[in-house]
Length: 257
Ligand code: PGA
Image 1 (tube, helix red, strand yellow):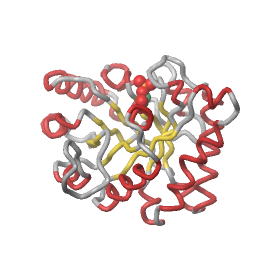
Image 2 (image 1 turned 60 degrees about the vertical axis):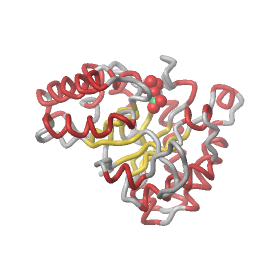
Image 3 (image 1 turned 90 degrees about the vertical axis):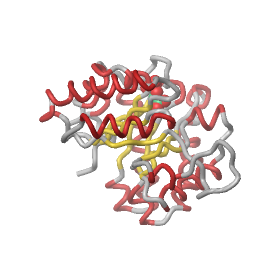
Image 4 (image 1 turned 30 degrees about the vertical axis):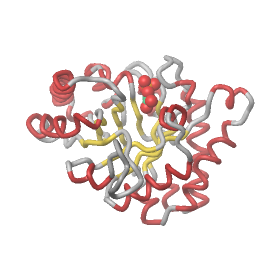
């Protein structure tokens, strides 16, 4: 059985107080539904609040075992990289996961595949599980280039990772036109790309192709999560906006079967 995962990407939102509120309320809701929580849940707050969220989790989460992830990292261990945070530091404060290559980082901060690969390597070296994001723009979809774009983002990475690294990787297919727009890929549209992503991984390593978790992201909400998550190649979600609303996010978490 593939691992089911629901990850919350808070992006650049929340304060110290609201971070606590979100987590406490989420845990209260999830505890009532504990028997329906089939997914591993990961919360990725802004980096300045990681330690704060870690202690809020420790104080409130007795047995849900919610994990802590960062939204980004740098691809070096240490040194003169003003403003950057290394995977070793994230692991040091209790992170287990890190989102890498989110489309907002690729588009707004010009992150290249080479940089993304460096970040992945450094994350693996420090025992973090990366959630690697891939996805096409609206224009790329409309010109029938979705598969070509996905392949150009994924294949060089798959080729450069070792088998051991691949076994730890989590993928997130996030069509850029669906992120924060309220437009969601239909379950069939998403499934088509997820199946393609899995075939690319399978071509690289048959076993990992079968076992890798591929999350869908892009306007996942309480009312569309179930239909997306029941598709065979969709193993959970990477959730932005709706992850800031405990009621919405807890419903998304319990929509995984
Ligand atoms: P969204 O964001 O759920 O707000 O569309 C998803 C993401 O960017 O990871």
